[in-house]
Amino acid sequence: MDEDTGSVPTEPVSKSERKRLRKRERWMEAKKRRKATRKEKRKASNARRIAEGRPSYRIERRMIKEKESSIPSPSDMQTVVIDLSFDDLMEDRNIKKLVNQIQRSYACNRRAVRPMNLHLTDFGGKTEAKMIESAPGYTSWNVHIHKESYLDIFEKENLVYLTSESDQVMTELDLRKVYIIGGLVDHNHHKGLCYKKAMEAGIGHAQLPIAEYIRLASRSVLTVNHVFEILSAFEESKDWREAFRRVIPERKVAKGKEQSKDTPSIVDTDKEKEET
Image (cartoon, rainbow, N blue to C red; front, side, top):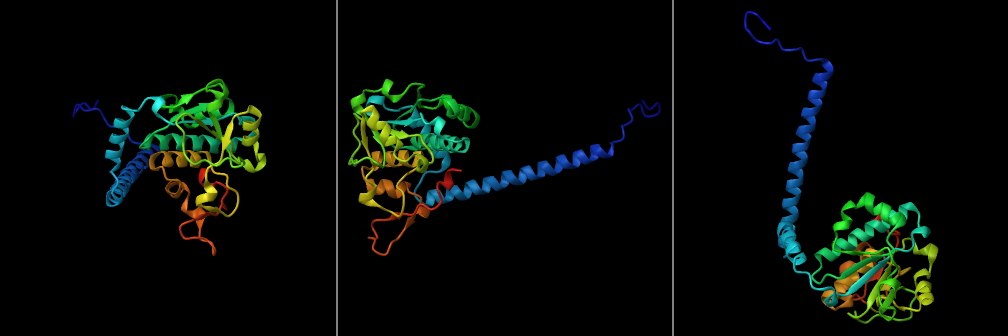
């Protein structure tokens, strides 16, 4: 203590400490700028939503919470299953894509006007591990998660596996039926597997009525979330054309020379880049 002033002398600040403090100040300033930028982006995005006749994000979140508090009973909802029994057939990068597609399907169902009764079956292995890593909050989702196969959960006569190889074309959704989406990424290496699985199990199968509404330039395989989103959109609109229009990415739609302007075609050139 200084005997003349009675104060404790201030310790000199080292060069490294001054450097750390300056770095901290720069970080705080950058944080403020990032926060301001995000705020401006939210304002601009909300303005666009309102101009398009959609609710703001705050109102949409409130609507989602209100809807979740008054979800209809499962007997009044269309049941959809994502079959996760293909773990051993996929590399880790495709497991990651699959988990991303499951998350998108769940997000779609949360926003849906008519939510579906969503089940995940054969849940375990690499898919479960990646879910724990990428979406640890999945245990609180409004989704039914089963270790068992769909064959152990639902009546066999009510099961319909959705596969592009089926010769049965869907015309509507039947509330009594349980529609199964194969949780398989990279179908090109396992062509016809979902159809074969349905045939071996002796259950129903069907394909979406894609050919009746859109012309495909190449393969007709869609991602898990695209199939789910199409079913969800059809459940709301009861219009297949409208359901495809809402879900199929614009970059995959092209106009052919002999094509009706009311019938878009899908050009599948990016092999699911949007899922990486």
